[in-house]
Image (cartoon, rainbow, N blue to C red; front, side):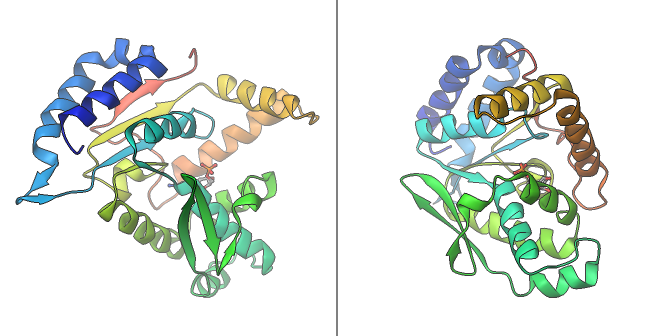
Length: 251
Ligand code: DC
């Protein structure tokens, strides 16, 4: 963090938005934040960008807490899932077979993804087009899940994520931020929740939008995505050793 005041805002925000986090992790969080705060702002006399990593499975609440924190701390929120989804949009639009790694590798070299911010909200630009509005569909989610296992896809997006974090204070969420993308992140949080709690949240969200859905099917879908994310060969989803574990099932 830039200074101890920033660390204090982070700590206070966590207190206000998710008091259980503090109850469960007060000592560890405070020690981490304040011990690192004094040393991280300057390295060799130069100001450093600070990064906060939030990892965990879909529906645990990562983006909700990351957006709140980023707004309060004046950091940039980086949604890395959106980058995998943008890549998936390209594959779908160009009829790339997600089961054929050679096709994927050839396609990746034609993809240019950049990130911009409009009123503080992340916009994903795919080969010059703003595709932000296309990212949150089930079809794109499934394609992203299938294709995020490939080395060519991951290495392109990890490079982009590291570049963003090099120059700007970021709160970045995803699956491999604390373990792979930013192993030296200033604070790492692993946010999780039971399958049932996450399925219920998704069910409520879709029902509120007037969409017909089935709780069991949603839970099964979540389980199969978790399995794919946690068992892929490259950068599987797992808690970094130095991450703070937070279970949001009852929050
Ligand atoms: O968080 P999300 O649902 O938008 O992510 C979409 C897919 O991208 C998800 O199936 C896992 C993958 N992903 C990943 O492999 N690594 C990340 N850092 C972020 C997302």
